[in-house]
Image (cartoon, rainbow, N blue to C red; front, side, top):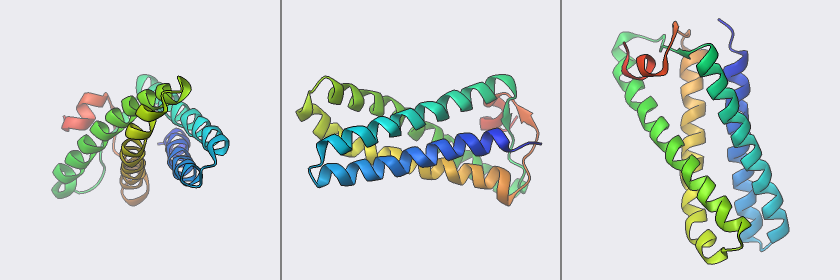
Amino acid sequence: MSILLPTISTSFIAISGILVAFGWYAIAKRQTEKHMKIMKWAAIFATLFFLTYVSRTAFVGNTHFGGPDSLKPIYQTFLFFHIILATVGGVMGLITLRYGYKKEFAKHRKIGPWTSIVWFISAITGVTVYTLLYLIYPGGETAGVIDVIFGK
């Protein structure tokens, strides 16, 4: 099984998370223009992740956990938690970006830190899922996303 596409998509989300950290640092230093540029790139890498992930899911499928059966319920709970965080983080990201682009800075400042925290945790859990699926344990068979989440 090739891990090229999962490696690429995970790299995109990791880069996005790192850029969000740099963007947060820039705005803390009141470097508004730098913050805007960095966050635009963070959004671009998050979008690249999403497109790569959705394409792989649609055309190849998702990978079953290949580790021991005793860890499978823990992995599936972790995966479900990651999916919820990624979904919430993605929606929050879109809202936060919209506020920034519309120059609704009071709203942007209010939601931005929360969005960043959710995005960091989502990126970290995403890299952890990748590590468990492809580096620590050999990936299992590929299947539809529902089958992978619920272990069918």
